[in-house]
Length: 179
Image (tube, rainbow, N blue to C red; front, top):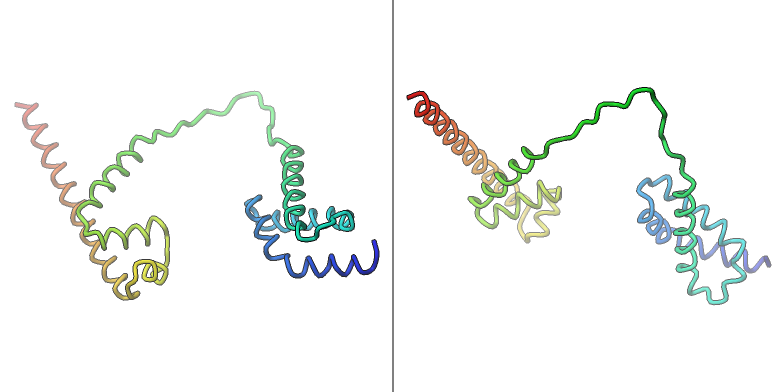
């Protein structure tokens, strides 16, 4: 490779490395693996740099190299299976309670005002910060905090009243069955 092409490749990597690393992060979940993936793709591309006639397509070429490299890594992975004399007990989680909890939560969210519901969803389900929630809803951070405080208090109150209603119902059922 000519000296000019080496400099051209170095300049390309210097200007595009952040975007290319973001592409690598989308392909593999681990940040260190993403850096390794990009580095491997750059090494493979360096050897073929002079063969890329239209340098405007270099990003696409490198992304294809990253995809192919990731596929090679996936195919070459070693399975972590260890033969044993006895099979381990299979544990199957019963998600019935989780579904019931979710249904209850969705039901009690209906008691909140729309603004309160929006704040709760963004802060707790979407895990946004107070500032991000304020920006998304067009309100101040203080308003988000006070709205969230009132909404959570209302949800606790609703849960307690439903729990009390359930206990009263269970007691009445036991008394009716005993009679």
